[in-house]
Length: 288
Image 1: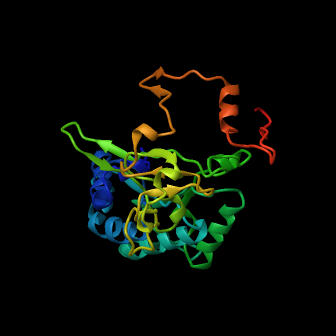
Image 2: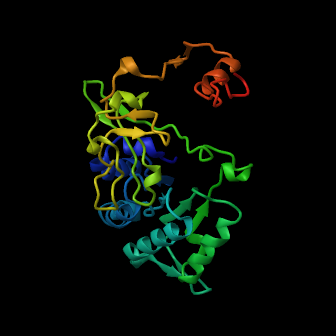
């Protein structure tokens, strides 16, 4: 089994340690992979995996039982991040680190690293060379690759990803959900109930209302402000439930297996070109 970001971030920054503990308790044997960069991958490796949960990890191999935790970083420069993670884990689990026949340090059997972000046939040798130069064995890390195995036309082409932004509890109440990795501010996700509105709706907003990413590991997780303006500043995504649902430009098209809107491809193309006009006011889109 392997976790993904929303199964970790749903616990909130203050609950990340408990989320990690839950993964170890839910899958006490065999392989279990856990994404660890939701907020601070380096703190997670040093303080959570390498300290507070250390005995649980070491206990995965004992009394005829075998298990391994696989730590997954998922942001930042692949070479630098993997090297830093392996280095921290080797420090925290130093008593179990061994040396290979080639003289490289190898983590104990109960813990390894998996890198699946930015993995291509070009970056894998780069990452391994980084490890080799610092005296770490290649067996410390395994790799996973997705879109890069095809034409590398993926969600990052237009920087588009769908993330969980809020959960609601059966007994009432809700919690904002977001990721905000210190290794890449560009991967921070929007939190809470969202609306997409025209920027003119917030013409008088205060400067502090505009979203600012956290400034490094000592910054505010999730950043500050709730207005996420588009590059053209004509549209704004309003987070944390502070928008006006009546002015939301997004409409519901699918719910619980039921198609609520049935649009043709032409309808979608024309709508996508709305506002694209030439200097004389004529439609400029090829489908308009």
